[in-house]
View 1: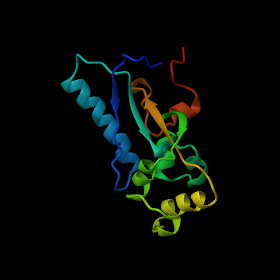
View 2: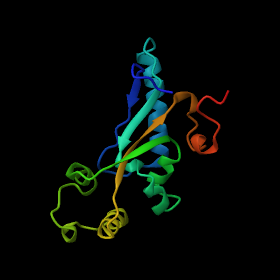
View 3: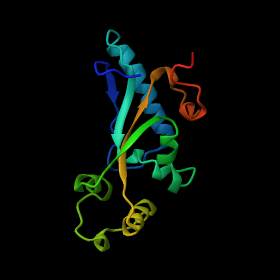
View 4: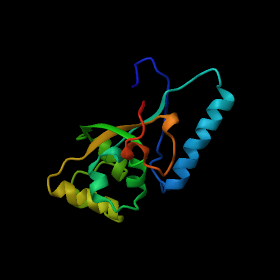
Length: 151
C-alpha cells in the first residue's frame, strides 16, 4: 500500500500527559485541514507512527475504555518488533532503572508493565498507519474491514 517514495506525515505522541481519544482525533482532523491549506501541492499517502503504544498486548490487557486501546482500534497496526533496549524502557518509565524493584508503579499502566516484566514477558514496539481516505474517527474502520482499498 505504501511505497518507499510515498510522502507520509509522521505523528508524534508526547511522552507526558493524557492521550485523550477525542483530542487525538481532532488533532488528526486539524492536521489534514492544515496540510490541505498550506501544502496543497504536496500530497501524502498516510499518517504513520512508531511507538511502544502499538504493542498489541496492550489491547488485551487494558480496559476497553483505555485511550491507548481506543487509539489502537482506530489505526492500521503493523508488525511488532522486540524492544529490549534501555531506550524503550526510558520512554515508558522516564529513565533507566537497574532493578525492577526500583521502578515506581504509581499508575496502573506502570504497574502492569512491571508485573509483566517480573513474569518474564517481553514488550514490543510497533507502528501504525492511518490513511486519510479512511479517516472516520471512532468508527474503528480497520477493525471492521471496510478500508484499505475496498474495491
